Amino acid sequence: MTAAELDPLIHVPARLRIIATLAALPDGESLSFTRLQEMIGLTPGNLITHLRKLGDAGYVDTEKTGNGQASRTTVALTHNGRTALERYTAALRDLIGEL
Amino acid sequence: MSERFDTFSPPKAEPDPWETATENETGDDGGELDPREAAALLQQTTRQAERQFDIRPPILMLAAAATVLVAYGAVWLSVRNQHPYSGPSGTALAVLYGTLAVWIVLVATVLRRALSGRSSPQRRLEGVAFAAIWICVYVFQGALHHAGASDAIAYGIYPAAAPLIIVGSAAAAYEVARENRAQAGFALAAVVLASIASFAGPAGVWGVIGVGLCVLVLVGAAAQLRQRHA
Image (cartoon, rainbow over all chains, first blue to last red; front, side):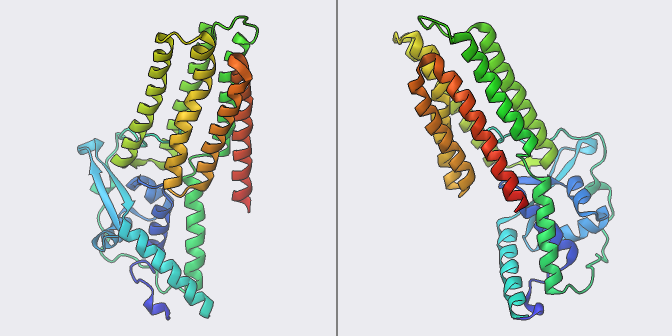
């Protein structure tokens, strides 16, 4: 196994932190976009870019509730995202073991 | 199961950044990531997030221990010298349900601060199911009184032990299904405690459960702290 075989969508510092943070949520919970941004420390624009990439791959799910000033976006890890992270973690473990 | 509440925070009166921010198409990927660095980053982020999402911080566990001690202790103080047993006083019941209400508000507040997100419909359904079980426990108490059960049963042993035995059993089964061994063990221990405490009689059962549950929560908190620092 080589580093190139690691899931390129996750093997990026910002997205790895996003996925790891969402994976630590209790089952069935989602996180507000604002709180995720505070925890990750990215600009809103950057965070949206990464979330869109992860969302296109089916790894995260974003949901908007309310309208106007009361609107709110929440983010959650999907089943596919959790599986991808488990696969990535296992691959990483194998890779480090080989190094 | 007290931590299972809707975690949807009330919307703030400020625009949602998702709506107002401009997507950065260049998307800073942060360059090459060494596998060892990735493993360290993954571990560090997971630890930090788990600490932030901790819905059972030690302070909450201490509050839980104090709550059960005050709630059950107040009832025990009001019934300990009753011969024959006639049931808790109105003041003792007010303390019991008042402390429980404060506890529920405290847990809901901590959950909102910790997660600041939204519970899935499944989680809300689980909360409704547990609330329904809890209500049925008290409906059954009414049936016992209606059927002529003694005050010692209807207002002593049953209300002190039955909620823990019935709701605790449901919680244990739920946690086993979720492969959450620690929580399942805690729920089972509460069920065993309540079952054994029932032999202490209609007055003693309140005191035994109050002290026993307080100790159980403190032991749980200590185990949690030890695990966190391991």
